[in-house]
Image (cartoon, rainbow, N blue to C red; front, side):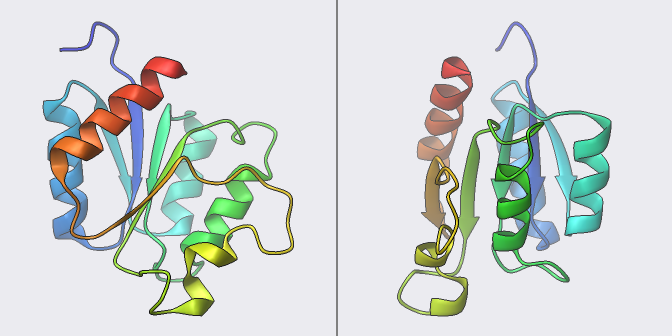
Length: 134
C-alpha cells in the first residue's frame, strides 16, 4: 500500500466502468474521485487538485477532448498527468479521435491513450509509474 494516498480523478460517464476504475485504484492504495460529466469534473478540480486524471472521450455535454484542452490550458492543472481511457479508437471516429487532441493547439499530449477494454494490471502499473514521477 502507498504511504501517502494520492487522489485520482476518474472522469467517466459509464457508472459501471467508473466503479470498476474506482475499485482498481482504491485497491492499489489511491483515493478515487469520480465525475460523470464536465460540470462534476470542474467542481472537483476547483475544490482539490488531483494527482492524476483518467478521462473518457465520449461524455454528455462537453466532450473529453474539450475537457482535456481546458485542463491542459490551465496554469493550475496543466501538469496533472492524464490517462485517456476510451472505447473510441483512432480509426473509428475521426471527430473524437486521439489525432484531434492536439490539432491546431500547442498542448502537451496525454501521458497515455488506452482503448477499452483495458488490462487492469497494465493500468495500475502506469498509474504507479506516473505518480512516482510526479
